[in-house]
Image (tube, rainbow, N blue to C red):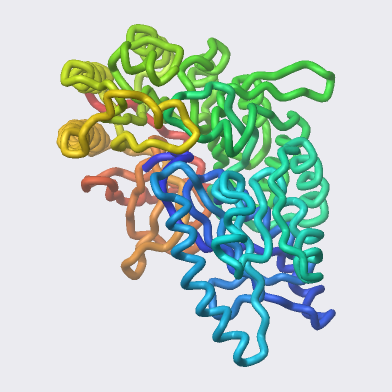
Length: 491
């Protein structure tokens, strides 16, 4: 139940324009593309846009690897041994490619994303089956890069030109309005200037760059017209957004959210991931002023120790984080807070860890993500002294996760008996069951007819699980399913 961009996930993206597929079939030039997405929500968004770019070239998405003429691994470099995971997958793909070749079928293989950016030509050297390596700022060039690869060149494109990518994709999207699920991602900002000593993002995604207001609003309007009810704005440091408006002014994220809230049919807004230093007054007040801005905030702190925060180059203190949380809860008392925590950072003592546990107890989280520190080559943390033993990191992580689990269970329990609005997104595992999202980003399971997918319905929460809520559909709602009720829980 998070919007954390660095969360591990794998998704086979199968989004494609129906109109473009019809044109491709008429031309007798339909090819299949298999896209596997690793890592973050931004990568999911990027994978969708890759299929957008490839659709006019006659590519139809498939979830069958063996049926693919083109395989793309859209990679993430956040986790430890991320590159080795990619090489292992490429070994399996090599066998599939060899089997296809026996029957006279070609298969091209591409690696995109942050591992592509970090590894570059090393990927082609270690995995000769790879035809093209494309960094996260260059995937808009996929059609031309594929042509080079077909001509026999080993393509490695890892230049940073984020403005060109956004401009190209904006033009492409105007030619094809794609049907998206009821909830979708929209990248508004990429890169990071913070240079936390544990993080590779500034090296793989580059400096902070924001899309223009006009680009974002135009894309959001098309998404809403296609049936999207909820948009999550994405950025490696999304609340550092500083996009240019049509009149030349620079807007922050708060003002952008206010503009997006005016779009008809767009009923829910979220954003992730944020840095504490960039939570300005206008953004905080948007949580008070905008009904469509959901009461959920992912605001990573990483550690509760001032010593470790300084070593991490977080550029905020423990006390500053507490004061920020107080300001946010003052305008949005029922907000669900989520966070990230790293245990075992170099030099972390028992007291430093206890400071983190104390911070968690004082803040109270609805959810959180926690990890043992693992070094990333090229980052300052990798060369620091006082590396913490693995067994100590494991014990600390277990204790922290147990505390967070207690808080998540308590937060979920506080929803019991409430009636809240739920965006119904898909069918559940059981017949007649739908799954949706609460305003606080918890999965909600309930019995409801399938034709309600895409609507927002008032649901009474009748039971809770460790991660999900269980609800009962309130009868007698209007056809649009806009009850507008998000009441505070009982005291």
